[in-house]
Length: 250
Image 1 (cartoon, helix red, strand yellow):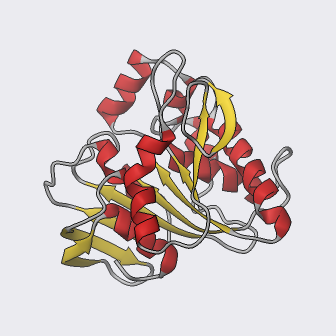
Image 2: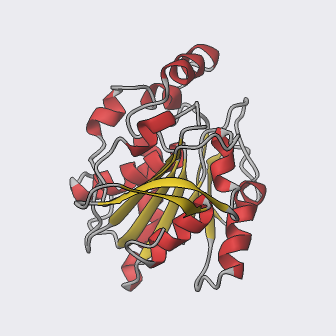
Image 3: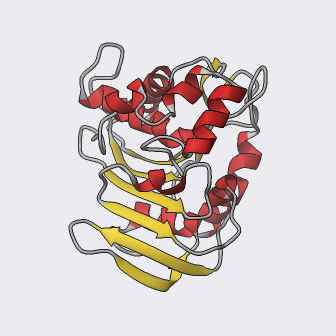
């Protein structure tokens, strides 16, 4: 199981993976998740990460980081005949998308195969950051990663829709109306499953990795069936675990 975090500002950039993912990893353990939980680092100042795929700055392209992630998964798992699940938050979901796109397109430098069974993305800008967030990211930081996350970027034009691992990959997209950094771009990629929190829950963009308990208004869809609504939807991290275990339980 891989947890891939999002963008960090700073010079050099970095975050504490253990803190970033603590609510999720604690909840997964309490809920009986079997297997290792890997938190992925890729920035120069990342710390507390159980897996380091790179030590780069925000100048590293998402394709570069995706290739590094694919190589790590191949070395640890695919080469041994084992498959993995992945949860990506924010930009982390795009890194996962890049990893699988390169394999699906059989690009040089990527593994020839990759076994990724399920992917869940939380607040990932699949169609680019919101207009204000995209402008702010580019003006404030002007980094390659900000450029990659802008609407209609060359990276997003390249990244496949719901890219598949060698044995097939089931994608679930999770987003929230409160997330003004990504908004409904979180759902703007073709996928088998989507979960949307329409209510005013007071969640920030980063809160999607923190909310593990409670029930919330939710719109969800399991393609090709029509979308459904419930007032008793699971919290984002619980919904993520449901997506990894089951096909339709939200």
